[in-house]
Image 1 (cartoon, rainbow, N blue to C red):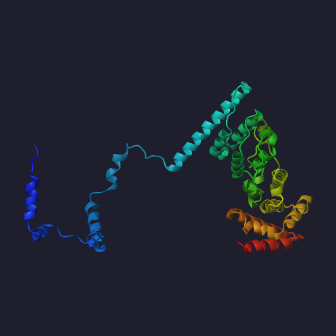
Image 2 (image 1 turned 180 degrees about the vertical axis):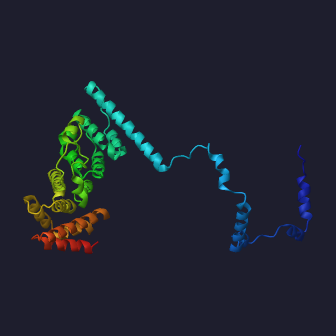
Image 3 (image 1 turned 45 degrees about the horizontal axis):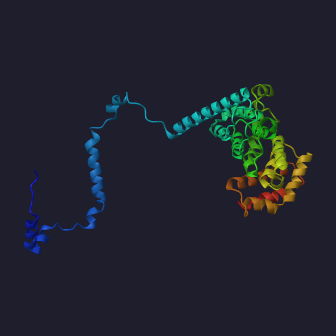
Length: 344
């Protein structure tokens, strides 16, 4: 049992004690300096002492044998993300294949699946898996499944434009062959910018060789249901893409500086200077005018830094190509390139 104290006696004792005695018994308050960090000299000395204490005791070789049987550490965030992405792709691919098989065997009796399932497949696919993704999209279209969402189309175009072993041909084929894929052109010109930039890159012509392109041979493609080949010429692909934009987005495409300059740059880099389509495109750029082009790149409706740089670089490449061939419009395009460079 705990001892019991008489609280009345304690209070009486406190009242009887003089104030001086209580003050003396109370500890003196500590100054704030006591809580301040120690002087650097003290810290260094303490650190040195601590290192000396463990210098002789710690040897890495001593512990090598102790960790032989320890399980490896958890995977890095990048490895975990890659594993999760692969699992999402496999799951989405299997679900779509199962749905397509049921739709084919039980026509009209299978409820439609959300097109966001295709979005998840496109988002989780690796570059080498995109041909299989396009094969499923073609089957999705042929069996009358729900149309792909604009978000899915934009992501698909972006992923195809990022293929290193393809010069943009796969994306243009998917967009142009609506009968097979049912992919509608994105309703924003900016969604096509990655593809226009890819088609007009200096490396596009070198990457356009038949053996290196991601678009498969026609015989192989017809067997797998994948995309078929178009022309490997970047200029042809750029004009096809610009023609699609003019057809489905006429109000925006005809006045889009990046699309116009990228298409013209792709043509000139391919050695095409005097064709009717190049002459028409040169006239279209001049009709848009230097002020409007500069306004789009750096004005009130300014493009992002990335696309502003694409406009500047494509104008520069056009001017350089025209100078080499003594093109009659070289002065106009040189002035445009200089103006964009000055506003950089």
